[in-house]
Image 1 (cartoon, one colour):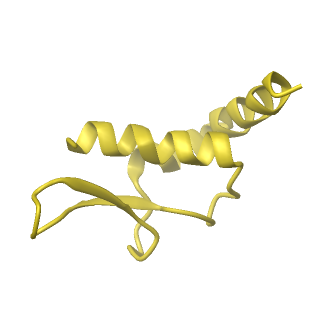
Image 2 (tube, helix red, strand yellow; image 1 turned 90 degrees about the horizontal axis):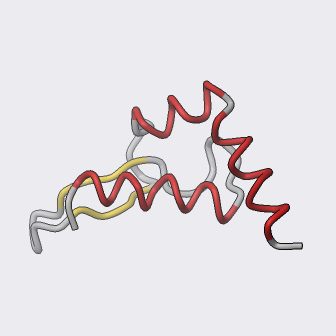
Image 3 (cartoon, one colour; image 1 turned 120 degrees about the vertical axis):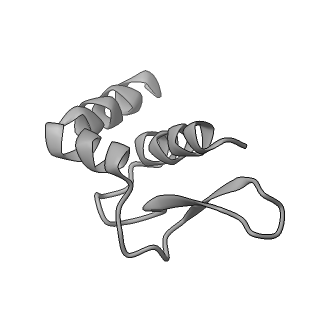
Length: 71
């Protein structure tokens, strides 16, 4: 998994699972063992793409839209 794909998966998790801003995975990292990228909630720094979506209100809009799609 590439960094870009891992960041997209991180954002998707926040949209579809409805995490609050500081819940769930917060960033991605490249694994020293397998070389792939993984999600992590242990990194103290929030991913910049995730931060931008939260601060701009886009995350809330996407979470709201996703909840409406389930009905």
